[in-house]
Amino acid sequence: MEKQVNPSVLKRFRYSTDEIIDAPFNWPQLIRLFTYVKPYSRTLLPKAIIAVTITTLIRLLIPILIGVYVINKALENKDGQLLWILVGSIAVLFLINTVANRFRIRWMNEIGQNVILDLRKHLFTHVQWLSHRFFDRRSAGSILVRIMNDINSLQELFTNGIVNLLMDLLLLIGVLIILFTLSPPLALAVFIILPIMFFISTTLRKKIRRSWQDVRSKQSKINSHLNESIQGMRITQSFTQENENMAFFNGINEESYESWRVATKKNSMFRPFVEMTNAVGSVVLIVYGAYLIKNGNLDLGTFVAFAFYLGMFWEPISRLGMVYNQLLMGMASSERIFEFLDEQPLVNEKSNAKRVSHLKGHIEFEDVEFGYEKNRLALKGISLDMKAGETVALVGHTGSGKTTIASLVSRFYDPTSGVVKMDGMDIRDLSLSDLRGQISIVLQETFIFSGTIIENIRFGNPDATDEEVKTAAQAVGANHFIERLPNSYDTEVEERGNILSVGERQLLSFARAILANPRIIILDEATASIDTETELQIQVALRTLLKNRTAIMIAHRLSTIREASQIIVLEQGSVLESGNHDTLMKHRGHYHQLVMSQFQDE
Image (cartoon, rainbow, N blue to C red; front, side, top):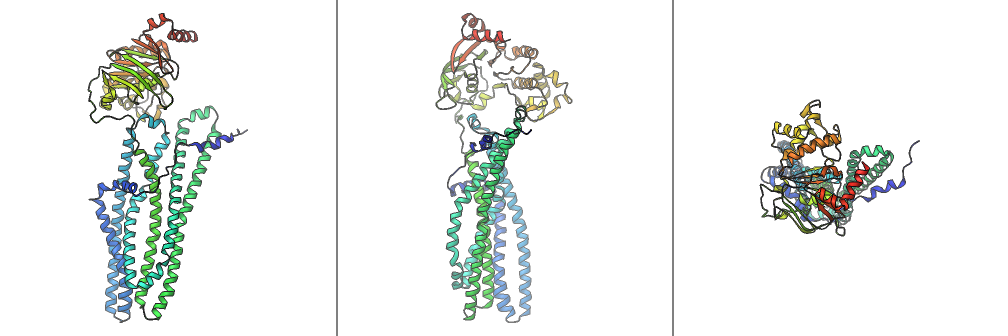
């Protein structure tokens, strides 16, 4: 029997954190977007503008040749020679127009693709340097949408929108000048409807833009859910939540469909409105034009040329509506892109940051407070002194602040108050790359990248030779399982290393850390997923690795920290007690209780 879906699941998609940005349409932002075209303003762009100018001038010239010269002069005077000259000239102009259009499309496509390349590179580079708090507040899927979908949506704008906008504006200006030159009374009569058209199109502007923002927001929700669903598929299947997951996806999928339907419906209102205006203008042209011809105020050739130009006038008006829709879509995406680009790292490197090529590893916390949220402190007045070369263990219940201390040492966050020092220097005064370059972190959840085993280990030191990589693997005993793999160190592993066991992935992370040859090592529950035999093997390797290096060990398995120089017991962000294992056991305090409790459980 099919499992019933909880109705509340259908409402979960309504609570996405990826909010719609509701800022007014503004020209400064549009100018900022088009600054990405600037690198090509001396190469490809001038060529495209020349091609656009040529095609526009040819289009403006041909109706004059047909109406004024072919009809009024060649046909009325029955001048066959002039007629063939004009026909040949028009054919040559059409040929030149075709060639110019070909190069225009080619050059504008090159500009568009280069702009997309540059913009995506800029956004990804910027995101790489943002603080951990930025990623704490956003899902991986929503970030992916900004870098891929939102930037892709700008492609049409840059490849066709820019040049169409320029071409249509030139065409409109030229047509208006020619129409009022040919017959000012007829031009005024035809354009009497333009104010009404302008008013209605203006009222549609905000609604269309808001609709495309909503579309982007719904796409972000879908990508976020897909990312979470794929990564959490084992959990979904383990708890038999497939139906709930499908209901959740169907909900956001239907909402995305509805947002697209509404946006395209509003878009579709503009073109028919232009066509209706064109029809009214054509009626006025025929009626009033016939009246002027009858009274001798307009000749037939000029009327034909005027009709050509009037058709040319409504064509760019209609295209400008499409370009404007592209612009609105682009603005909706650019607002979301610039929101990320305007995000500043909370952890900033000073302009005069001190370069440190070699750290001893003496770490001090002086009355440090820190909170992930304003009204909730994770650390409360912490003062610690970790000597260079010491192995310091942090123990305590979940949420006591152990990982937070390690994060502050790596300067993933800055303290709310107080100072974290490295070798007597405030770490905020040090170069971030120099500081983090001398710290290696091994987490409980090891991330394995797509690629070979040797590439994953070399991530700790990209310049390492194959022999150095193998030596690092041997130091932690990872070579035993690696050499049993089909292609040994060249075995391909997929994202997250699903072909490897949890323990094997952890051994790779140890090898990666050793290869980096750091001054400070942070082990955050690093041995929690390794069996006892493997752990003993790693303990032997760690004695060599940790010699003359500062190590911070976070562990729930207290047997792994007996040899630590200093054990710091934390509770709800405060230090309860500190000392080595023997001292704390004699003290018979909180640490003693933790050890005895774990011993009894085992």
